[in-house]
Image 1: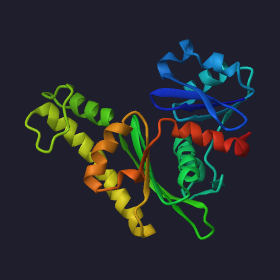
Image 2: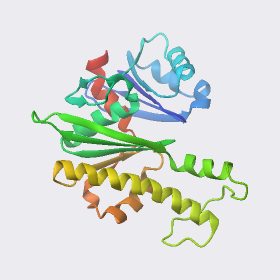
Image 3: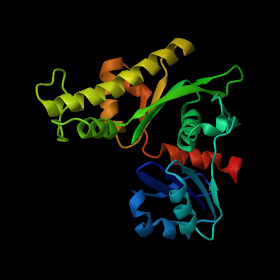
Image 4: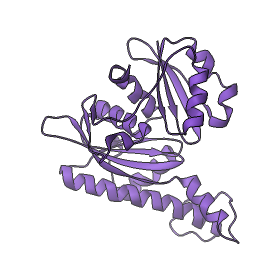
Length: 251
């Protein structure tokens, strides 16, 4: 049994994957709660573990201790793996979570795809095909996530408060203005990358969206870029799926 772990900036997710590639018992906790989570119990049911960690060295060490005596394998992006080519200037500098997400998205669609992870940060990555029909990662962007944008705004201004607002066409109060402005910023960034990828590919790309704000973004996004909802897929455990595919590359 393989244990796959996705340790992000705020939360850690994990699941067991059987020999047929079926994911079982997915779980999640805040990074601050790892010590009291069920990760250790999950590790006791596995014989191998593969980890995508972007939460720093201290979290990496904590996870390694929790999965003992298993040998903790932490993935680092490569120039090529699982039929996906990585065009990053320094392949290993691409975030492990982004790399695993690209791998998963390619194996889902095998066609041009915009891969969006909407969590603490929002990453927007462009995936197309090369002449040999492999996946080709062209590049992507990173921006603050919705909560991070709102928190940064309210913490650095004297008269703005962090109250929940609504996304509206024409906001008429401060809370709605903040909510709408931050969400519009994310939608605008995604729309730009979508249009650029479409211009390269010659056809509308698929969209795969993961992360805590995936549903929030998807609902507004489809209205603004006029994309067919059949081309949009929301996946909760995209990184974990990618890790399962990458097992033979790293273990």
